[in-house]
Structure formats: C-alpha cells, structure tokens
Amino acid sequence: MGAQGGTGCPREATSQHAPGSRRGVQTSESPAAAVPDNPLVAVDHYENFPVASVLCPPRIRPAVAAIYHFARCADDIADEGDASAEQRLADLKAYGEDLSAVFRGSGASTRWGGIFGALAEARQQHDLPLQPLMDLLEAFGRDVYSPRYETREDLLGYCRLSANPVGRLLLHLYGLNDAYAKHQSDCVCSALQLINFWQDCSVDLPRSRVYLPEADARKHGLDLSAPATLKDSASSQALLAELCNWARGLMLQGAGLALTLPGRAGWELRLVVQGGLRILDRIAALQFRTLRQRPTLGLIDAGPLAWRALRMRRDAVLMP
Image 1 (cartoon, rainbow, N blue to C red):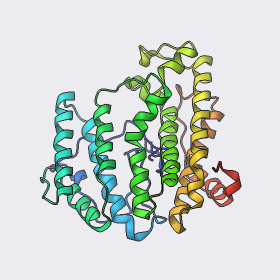
Image 2: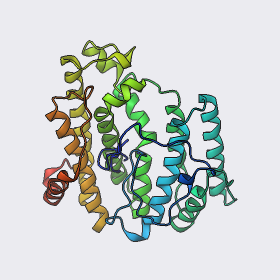
Image 3: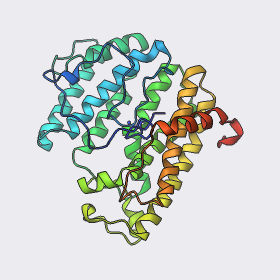
C-alpha cells in the first residue's frame, strides 16, 4: 500500500522519482539526514513509499514522515557513495542496532542525525511494530550485492521485504490489522514494486541491476548474463508484456482495499492504485520498449488519475 516513486509502496510509480538520482549516504554530517520540520515530505527517491500529502490524515503525517526518512537513509547506505560492500553492510548493521535500541526504549546514537529521534516519537505515539522496519533493512542488505531472481516467486520474496512492510506499517497507523486487509495491502505494494521494475529497465540494466525473473527471460530466449548489453527486441517486449500483465493482476487483487479505507486514506490509496495502473498503460503505449525508454507521469496525468479514482467501484476490482 504505497505510492510508486521511482512505487512503495518502497521502488514506486506514482510519485515518480528519477532512478539513479539517489543522494549519498546520510550520516550526522549530512544535512539530508535531518528530518524536516514540515511533515508534508515530498518523496524524492526512496521507493515504495506513500507520499505524506494533504490527503494523508494529519494525525499520522509525522509518523509517515519519520518512517519514510528512516527507510530513505537506509536505502542510501545500501546504494550510494563509494563505500565497499563490506562497509555498507557494516553501516546497515549499525543502523539496525540503533533501530533496536529505539524499540528497547534506550537512546540511539547521533550518527544518523534526527532519523531515530523522530522514529522514537512515532513509535511511542503509535506503538509501531518493529518487524516491518527490520524487514526493510534486510531488503536493503540484499540490494548491496544486486542479486538475481530465478523465478517470480523469488522476486515476490524480495517484495515481501522491500515493499510490503510499508503497507503494513500504514495499515497499523490506520488501525487496520485484519488478515485480508494485509493481504490486499501486500498485493498493492508488491504490484507497485514490480511496476517500477518494468518501468526502470533502461536505468537498472546498465547498472547491472536485474529484476527480470531469469526463468521468464529464458522462456523468451533472453540471456541475462550481461544485462548492460541487453537490447530492446521483440523478445524483450513479449517478456515485459507478460510481466506487466502479472503486475496488473496483483494490483487488481488488492485494489479493493482503497474502497474500504475511510476518508482521506482511501482516496490517497485510490490515487496510488490508479497511478500504478497508468504507468502500466504508458508502458503498453510504448509497446513494452522500456529497455529503451522510461515512461513517467506528470501534471497532465493529474486529471485522468483523479477521474479514475473517483470512478473506482467495488464491482470494478477483484473482490473475494
């Protein structure tokens, strides 16, 4: 249950950051590490995260902002700067130790600026669960080595750590903890993550970041052993068409959650869902040539997204 930014929910598609634009590792020496006073944060580069927008209920905006900054800083530790893989993992370990300290009620170090102070307040006010935050750190640790994924289920296993925790944290803030709402949230967050993967092929593959399932690629005669050399072709287009249909199906499985969330939260999730679906439409309009071009959303999409969100009905999405 996130907004795609570059989707989550954690890689996103509705806030549309430019992949590869992530900033350097944020430490206490980095001004970006400080949590801004204004909780209406603009999601600039952490993926799979819902925007703390005017649609977000005011009572939870500071908590949403605190979780976002926690995840964004961890994302930068794993992905930015010139540190070795070993140093990144050591820093993530230290970051996780500070997280554990916050949840024990003891003070975190000052290494990460205001990140953990804001998170401690959110934990105290909303009784945040620890495990989803730990899952995010595990996902970032995996990113250090840019692993490959053999099957779709393997890729979904990554989404369970990198995207789904964001939705579950938001459900907690909204006071929704039933099993089916969690399932729907997981579907939306995983779909947003996958949509961003298919959106970002032209950016990820030259950096040897491969999120295409190896088994699906082989089925279409594609060799992913040298991803930077992979070119747009009829085979890659057919592969991405299948993967986009998969992501669309997942999104529709969870879309009904937007119709059950009350007030502003429901409207924000409607826009998140429609943003992800519109990115899929853009990919299809490019004939699935995202190895060549990255589709984005802009101001011109605001009207159609609002109209689609308004027209969402319980009988227009897959329900149990």
